[in-house]
Image (cartoon, rainbow, N blue to C red):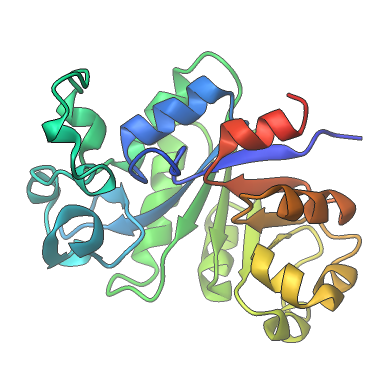
Length: 258
Protein backbone atom coordinates (compact mmCIF):
# COMPACT_ATOMS: atom_id res chain seq x y z
CA UNK A 1 0.00 0.00 0.00
CA UNK A 2 1.30 3.47 -0.92
CA UNK A 3 2.21 5.62 2.07
CA UNK A 4 -0.20 8.43 2.89
CA UNK A 5 1.13 11.69 1.51
CA UNK A 6 1.67 14.57 3.96
CA UNK A 7 1.07 17.96 2.34
CA UNK A 8 1.96 21.20 4.12
CA UNK A 9 -1.09 23.50 4.22
CA UNK A 10 0.14 26.97 3.18
CA UNK A 11 3.55 25.70 4.30
CA UNK A 12 4.35 24.59 7.85
CA UNK A 13 1.76 27.12 8.95
CA UNK A 14 1.12 26.18 12.56
CA UNK A 15 4.34 27.88 13.68
CA UNK A 16 5.13 29.99 10.62
CA UNK A 17 3.19 32.69 8.80
CA UNK A 18 1.11 31.05 6.08
CA UNK A 19 2.07 31.26 2.42
CA UNK A 20 5.49 32.77 3.14
CA UNK A 21 8.73 31.42 1.75
CA UNK A 22 9.81 30.82 5.34
CA UNK A 23 6.81 28.54 5.95
CA UNK A 24 7.47 26.52 2.80
CA UNK A 25 11.20 26.15 3.45
CA UNK A 26 10.39 24.90 6.95
CA UNK A 27 7.94 22.36 5.49
CA UNK A 28 10.61 21.12 3.08
CA UNK A 29 13.12 20.84 5.93
CA UNK A 30 10.58 18.83 7.91
CA UNK A 31 10.23 16.35 5.05
CA UNK A 32 6.76 17.21 3.72
CA UNK A 33 5.80 15.20 0.65
CA UNK A 34 3.98 18.14 -0.85
CA UNK A 35 3.18 21.82 -0.47
CA UNK A 36 -0.28 23.39 -0.72
CA UNK A 37 -1.03 26.96 -1.70
CA UNK A 38 -3.87 29.24 -2.74
CA UNK A 39 -3.32 31.57 -5.68
CA UNK A 40 -4.75 34.91 -6.72
CA UNK A 41 -3.92 37.17 -9.64
CA UNK A 42 -2.53 40.67 -9.11
CA UNK A 43 -3.53 43.73 -11.14
CA UNK A 44 -0.34 43.37 -13.21
CA UNK A 45 -0.85 39.68 -13.93
CA UNK A 46 1.26 37.84 -11.34
CA UNK A 47 0.02 34.78 -9.49
CA UNK A 48 0.67 35.17 -5.77
CA UNK A 49 0.20 32.77 -2.87
CA UNK A 50 -2.55 34.45 -0.84
CA UNK A 51 -5.73 32.98 0.63
CA UNK A 52 -7.89 36.03 1.38
CA UNK A 53 -9.13 38.63 -1.10
CA UNK A 54 -7.23 41.28 0.85
CA UNK A 55 -4.09 41.44 2.99
CA UNK A 56 -5.93 42.86 5.99
CA UNK A 57 -5.55 39.73 8.11
CA UNK A 58 -1.95 38.92 7.24
CA UNK A 59 -0.49 42.22 6.05
CA UNK A 60 -2.52 44.95 7.80
CA UNK A 61 -3.55 46.34 4.41
CA UNK A 62 -7.15 46.82 3.29
CA UNK A 63 -6.39 46.68 -0.43
CA UNK A 64 -7.60 43.71 -2.44
CA UNK A 65 -4.98 41.53 -4.12
CA UNK A 66 -6.67 41.82 -7.51
CA UNK A 67 -6.37 45.64 -7.53
CA UNK A 68 -2.74 45.82 -6.34
CA UNK A 69 0.46 45.41 -8.30
CA UNK A 70 3.18 43.02 -7.24
CA UNK A 71 5.63 45.78 -6.35
CA UNK A 72 3.11 47.19 -3.86
CA UNK A 73 2.35 43.79 -2.38
CA UNK A 74 6.07 43.17 -1.98
CA UNK A 75 6.34 46.13 0.36
CA UNK A 76 4.10 44.40 2.91
CA UNK A 77 5.31 42.27 5.79
CA UNK A 78 2.92 39.30 5.83
CA UNK A 79 4.74 37.41 8.59
CA UNK A 80 4.72 39.82 11.56
CA UNK A 81 1.09 39.04 12.47
CA UNK A 82 2.03 35.46 13.37
CA UNK A 83 4.49 36.46 16.09
CA UNK A 84 3.64 40.09 16.94
CA UNK A 85 6.02 40.30 19.90
CA UNK A 86 9.09 38.96 18.07
CA UNK A 87 10.69 42.40 17.79
CA UNK A 88 10.86 42.57 21.58
CA UNK A 89 12.96 39.38 21.81
CA UNK A 90 16.59 40.55 21.93
CA UNK A 91 17.83 36.97 21.58
CA UNK A 92 15.80 36.13 18.48
CA UNK A 93 17.97 35.50 15.41
CA UNK A 94 17.87 37.96 12.52
CA UNK A 95 15.47 36.82 9.79
CA UNK A 96 15.75 37.59 6.09
CA UNK A 97 12.81 39.94 5.33
CA UNK A 98 12.25 38.12 2.02
CA UNK A 99 11.07 35.09 4.00
CA UNK A 100 8.06 37.11 5.16
CA UNK A 101 7.01 38.88 1.96
CA UNK A 102 4.11 38.06 -0.35
CA UNK A 103 5.27 35.02 -2.29
CA UNK A 104 4.79 34.59 -6.02
CA UNK A 105 3.79 31.19 -7.32
CA UNK A 106 6.77 31.34 -9.66
CA UNK A 107 9.14 31.62 -6.68
CA UNK A 108 7.41 28.72 -4.93
CA UNK A 109 7.71 26.50 -8.01
CA UNK A 110 11.38 27.48 -8.41
CA UNK A 111 11.94 26.50 -4.78
CA UNK A 112 10.36 23.10 -5.36
CA UNK A 113 12.31 22.56 -8.59
CA UNK A 114 15.59 23.30 -6.78
CA UNK A 115 14.96 21.46 -3.52
CA UNK A 116 16.78 18.27 -4.51
CA UNK A 117 13.99 15.72 -4.01
CA UNK A 118 10.55 15.02 -5.47
CA UNK A 119 7.89 17.27 -3.93
CA UNK A 120 4.30 17.66 -5.10
CA UNK A 121 2.51 21.00 -5.25
CA UNK A 122 -1.25 21.31 -4.70
CA UNK A 123 -2.45 24.65 -6.07
CA UNK A 124 -5.92 25.97 -5.28
CA UNK A 125 -7.35 28.66 -7.55
CA UNK A 126 -9.60 30.99 -5.58
CA UNK A 127 -13.02 31.99 -6.92
CA UNK A 128 -14.99 34.11 -7.44
CA UNK A 129 -12.49 36.64 -8.78
CA UNK A 130 -12.72 39.66 -11.07
CA UNK A 131 -10.35 37.88 -13.49
CA UNK A 132 -12.44 34.73 -13.97
CA UNK A 133 -10.77 32.18 -16.23
CA UNK A 134 -7.62 34.27 -16.64
CA UNK A 135 -6.39 32.78 -13.35
CA UNK A 136 -6.37 29.26 -14.79
CA UNK A 137 -4.87 30.41 -18.09
CA UNK A 138 -2.01 32.15 -16.29
CA UNK A 139 -1.52 29.10 -14.10
CA UNK A 140 -1.26 26.69 -17.02
CA UNK A 141 1.09 29.07 -18.84
CA UNK A 142 3.36 29.14 -15.81
CA UNK A 143 3.29 25.36 -15.45
CA UNK A 144 4.26 25.12 -19.12
CA UNK A 145 7.35 27.27 -18.47
CA UNK A 146 8.48 24.68 -15.92
CA UNK A 147 7.60 21.76 -18.18
CA UNK A 148 4.93 20.80 -15.66
CA UNK A 149 1.78 20.94 -17.79
CA UNK A 150 1.91 17.28 -18.85
CA UNK A 151 1.44 13.83 -17.41
CA UNK A 152 4.70 13.87 -15.42
CA UNK A 153 3.88 17.07 -13.54
CA UNK A 154 4.36 17.23 -9.75
CA UNK A 155 1.47 19.73 -9.65
CA UNK A 156 -2.22 19.15 -9.09
CA UNK A 157 -4.83 21.89 -9.33
CA UNK A 158 -7.63 22.18 -6.79
CA UNK A 159 -10.75 24.31 -6.61
CA UNK A 160 -14.20 24.52 -5.10
CA UNK A 161 -15.25 25.73 -8.57
CA UNK A 162 -16.16 22.94 -10.99
CA UNK A 163 -15.97 25.47 -13.83
CA UNK A 164 -12.40 26.40 -12.89
CA UNK A 165 -11.33 22.76 -12.99
CA UNK A 166 -13.01 22.32 -16.36
CA UNK A 167 -10.90 25.21 -17.66
CA UNK A 168 -7.69 23.56 -16.46
CA UNK A 169 -8.74 20.26 -18.02
CA UNK A 170 -9.29 21.92 -21.40
CA UNK A 171 -5.94 23.75 -21.24
CA UNK A 172 -3.83 20.93 -19.74
CA UNK A 173 -5.80 17.66 -19.83
CA UNK A 174 -3.05 15.61 -18.18
CA UNK A 175 -2.68 17.76 -15.05
CA UNK A 176 -4.39 16.04 -12.07
CA UNK A 177 -7.45 17.80 -10.67
CA UNK A 178 -8.91 17.90 -7.17
CA UNK A 179 -12.61 18.73 -6.73
CA UNK A 180 -12.79 20.33 -3.30
CA UNK A 181 -16.00 19.62 -1.37
CA UNK A 182 -17.06 22.27 1.10
CA UNK A 183 -20.27 20.63 2.35
CA UNK A 184 -21.23 16.96 2.47
CA UNK A 185 -24.62 17.65 0.91
CA UNK A 186 -22.90 19.04 -2.21
CA UNK A 187 -21.47 15.62 -3.10
CA UNK A 188 -24.62 14.00 -4.59
CA UNK A 189 -24.69 16.78 -7.20
CA UNK A 190 -20.93 16.91 -7.74
CA UNK A 191 -20.55 13.18 -8.29
CA UNK A 192 -22.73 13.49 -11.41
CA UNK A 193 -20.29 16.04 -12.81
CA UNK A 194 -16.74 15.04 -11.89
CA UNK A 195 -14.75 12.62 -14.00
CA UNK A 196 -13.85 9.23 -12.49
CA UNK A 197 -10.13 10.09 -12.43
CA UNK A 198 -10.58 13.37 -10.56
CA UNK A 199 -9.40 13.42 -6.96
CA UNK A 200 -11.99 14.39 -4.33
CA UNK A 201 -11.02 16.86 -1.58
CA UNK A 202 -13.43 16.94 1.37
CA UNK A 203 -12.81 18.87 4.57
CA UNK A 204 -12.08 16.82 7.67
CA UNK A 205 -14.98 18.41 9.56
CA UNK A 206 -17.45 17.17 6.96
CA UNK A 207 -16.00 13.66 7.18
CA UNK A 208 -16.31 13.77 10.98
CA UNK A 209 -19.82 15.20 11.06
CA UNK A 210 -21.20 13.15 8.15
CA UNK A 211 -19.80 9.59 8.26
CA UNK A 212 -21.86 8.70 5.20
CA UNK A 213 -19.70 10.99 3.07
CA UNK A 214 -16.67 8.78 3.59
CA UNK A 215 -18.68 5.70 2.60
CA UNK A 216 -19.96 7.41 -0.54
CA UNK A 217 -16.41 8.31 -1.53
CA UNK A 218 -15.20 4.70 -1.28
CA UNK A 219 -13.16 3.79 -4.33
CA UNK A 220 -12.24 7.39 -5.11
CA UNK A 221 -8.85 9.02 -4.58
CA UNK A 222 -9.32 11.29 -1.54
CA UNK A 223 -7.21 14.24 -0.34
CA UNK A 224 -8.44 15.73 2.95
CA UNK A 225 -7.99 19.21 4.45
CA UNK A 226 -7.03 20.32 7.13
CA UNK A 227 -5.85 17.38 9.25
CA UNK A 228 -4.06 18.40 12.45
CA UNK A 229 -4.95 15.89 15.19
CA UNK A 230 -4.32 12.23 15.92
CA UNK A 231 -8.04 11.49 15.80
CA UNK A 232 -8.48 13.08 12.40
CA UNK A 233 -5.43 11.29 11.05
CA UNK A 234 -6.84 7.97 12.27
CA UNK A 235 -10.14 8.69 10.51
CA UNK A 236 -8.25 9.38 7.29
CA UNK A 237 -6.30 6.15 7.65
CA UNK A 238 -9.52 4.21 8.18
CA UNK A 239 -10.96 5.72 5.00
CA UNK A 240 -7.87 4.93 2.93
CA UNK A 241 -7.17 8.60 2.26
CA UNK A 242 -4.32 9.19 -0.21
CA UNK A 243 -3.12 12.56 1.11
CA UNK A 244 -3.67 14.73 4.18
CA UNK A 245 -3.21 18.49 4.00
CA UNK A 246 -1.98 19.73 7.37
CA UNK A 247 -0.65 22.79 9.19
CA UNK A 248 1.64 20.40 11.10
CA UNK A 249 3.63 18.36 8.57
CA UNK A 250 6.41 17.35 10.99
CA UNK A 251 3.89 16.08 13.54
CA UNK A 252 1.87 14.15 10.98
CA UNK A 253 5.01 12.54 9.58
CA UNK A 254 6.02 11.54 13.10
CA UNK A 255 2.60 10.01 13.76
CA UNK A 256 2.92 8.02 10.56
CA UNK A 257 6.29 6.66 11.69
CA UNK A 258 8.21 8.69 9.15
